[in-house]
Length: 300
Image (cartoon, rainbow, N blue to C red; front, side):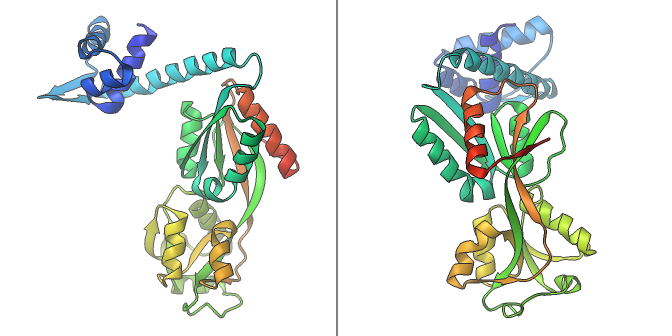
């Protein structure tokens, strides 16, 4: 088995299409087909179902795809380590972050890093906390920034900043003029929340548990995939929500949102990296800059 065969397999598996994979790899379609057939015949396993003119991964193909991606991630890490033995004149910083962090906290730090290292290519993607942790585990990101708890022995976690989840409602909500609400009153409102798996949602669920309020008893009228969608819906009167203070700031300034007092704890923004993977010099430099700008951090 060669690295070229593995690259071809991953390209085909991700596209579920031989011709598209060939175009992406700048190869001929017969060369791609031959590489897949060689893998299958040598190891006595079918990696794809052939259904008419379509192809689909078999169960064996899905399992092999995970391993193949891990191999390519290790190869990329090795190439990166060699290329960076000199200086930080060139390189790539691959970052994935949760929505709150990628939209409201991280950009200024990335811009500061860019000013210091203008020839470093910065690749930023976003997802919820669970998706970010998986990206770091899979080698798709050098660093992951999350606000939720992540329990995985393979990941190193370091606190880089702090934030607070706040309870907010629209200007016409019955709670808009209230200084505070009691925990039991939370069951009387309609709620607009982020999707399960997001750090904001997880933090709110944990806070409710400490307050003795069963999350499953909340009247959740909307679950939305972005902070902006949640904020806009609450401003329009769809219900109450618990979101980052950073996300709520613009609505609070304009008067479209009103903050309601509730004892919600402070939370941490953390950076993740894989304990067993080489941490690129660009990633090391970025972490050092963060530590200097944020005044220190704690690791676990």
